[in-house]
Image (cartoon, rainbow, N blue to C red; front, side, top):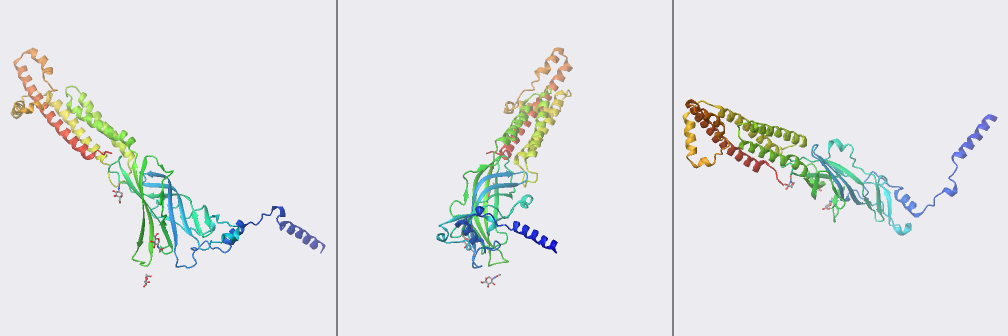
Length: 418
Ligand SMILES: *[C@@H]1O[C@H](CO)[C@@H](O)[C@H](O)[C@H]1NC(C)=O
Ligand SMILES: *[C@@H]1O[C@H](CO)[C@@H](O)[C@H](O)[C@H]1NC(C)=O
Ligand SMILES: *[C@@H]1O[C@H](CO)[C@@H](O)[C@H](O)[C@H]1NC(C)=O
């Protein structure tokens, strides 16, 4: 019995210590702001739209203050960082300032009140699971119930690229925002009347320049529910690639390599310099194709035209190599040429065409030693050799003109320009 009483006494002491009230000097004065806060939230329900009549819509005004935009053309996604100002009216968060020491505005944590959930409809699937429709920030509340929240949000959307004019391409990227489940009659997203998009303090992402932002409000009705609208806020961003780098790496060298190929057509086939030059040019084409292959998206819907240019130029260069080999072979021929070659040579040398045929393959060089022998058969062989050489000259000139023409067309059609 004694033990039991003792136990009770100990229990009472512990209970008393635990339930000891806060020391009076620690107690905070219950000032107007705390009282207002308590009065506003004591019966507040976060889960429902803050309207007294359920038929009323909550109009949410949206303003994007854009801070940073980065575009990943390999993944075809782009990310916008912005301060999103959201403003709506909460019918349950109003008060009369004179009742609370003339407080007109207070700050309130967003998770304590109802907030609209603004979803990004074309979110990138990889990042969508990390992008919450809800935000957590401190909001400003006025006595008439106007709530203003400015969360710092990042949105990653999908943007299908069109690379035809790479690297001088511009891209259209669009973000669609709206409420996932509420109709426009419940939560009505609209723009701020003034400055729906603010670009002060905006920084371009690496490699891209923002040309303009177009905002538009879509209000759609679907056949399933003719009495409900589904408003969407659409932001279209027009981005331009900063092309100086890719142009220096690919476009300018492509033109250089074309000139190299063309120059090689003018060279003498006598020594192998010409062959080396054309082979080097072909090698250069492979390098550039690899270089562009790294840079362009793997699943782009269209092909950069510079790629087609390099492809066709590569074929012309290959033909150049074959032509050089054939010409080298023609030069070495000693057999008397067929009559049609001789008559064609006559025809060309007696017509204005002879001014077009260039004469790098002047046979005098190779003929010099043979002239010394002054042998009749050698003489005949020399003359038949010079017929072959003249034929090779004509062939080379014709092929040069054709290659020049082909390149002229290719450059006009396929080289992108700014
Ligand atoms: C972007 O979209 C606008 C309007 O839809 C269109 O006029 C423009 O040509 C597009 N630009 C590109 C680069 O796709
Ligand atoms: C939503 O707002 C738009 C303009 O901002 C207005 O035209 C429209 O009538 C509103 N819809 C509802 C259901 O209140
Ligand atoms: C739409 O509203 C009309 C008139 O108020 C009504 O007759 C009709 O049943 C409604 N339709 C739906 C799908 O709610």
